[in-house]
Image 1: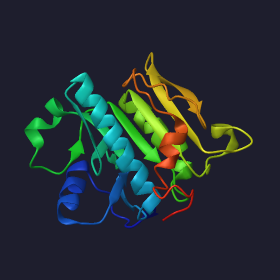
Image 2: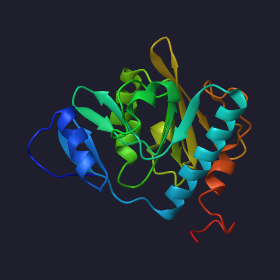
Image 3: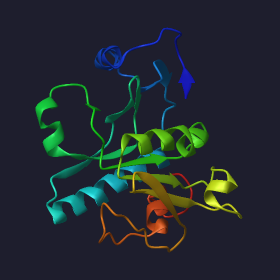
Image 4: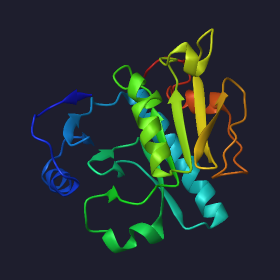
Amino acid sequence: MTQTQNKTLTIAEYREFCAQSDERYELVRGRLAKLTPPTWAHIFIADFLVGIFNAECARLQNGDRAIREGRQRTEENSARLPDVMVVSLRAIAPYLNEVALLENAARLVVEIVSPSSAREDYTDKLREYEAKGIQEYWIVDYEALGAGRYIGLPKAPTISIYSMVDEEYEVATFRACDRLVSAVFPTLELTADQVFAAAYPNGSGESP
């Protein structure tokens, strides 16, 4: 992520900027921050989770939808672009022809860790999503890029799920064949390894 300009923007100015730009930017305390392009593995994991979550939404008939490329307002002049969001269709229904910038809290957001995002995913974004009241925040660290204090030692691919309890996040970490435990999708049958395997669709453990 790279800061791109000195002028601070309001959320309304950011919304207008996004309507005119094909590039991916977040707004961080009023400053535009350009996102680095995702890898193929990153995209494959995000698409896999969108499919899994939407199957659960359909089964539960909860009126939610998992999406990519949506923006989440987190503070007065900050907005993030999570890799995956689970949103209420009722909440977005009045704004279908506007820039996809969610004002109220998403039900669930996912960040897939990359070398350029590792610090922020575990610190700034975590604090912002918690303060916003997002019920659940997943950090998918398939390359074990996070610091040991977040994913443990020895470091290994880890999914951290932060769940809102009494207005604060509590975290559980999952590796290998651990079944993921989600408050948003309580009957989800999915292991950490199944998510990590989505990064390598040829089954070799290496990028295609």
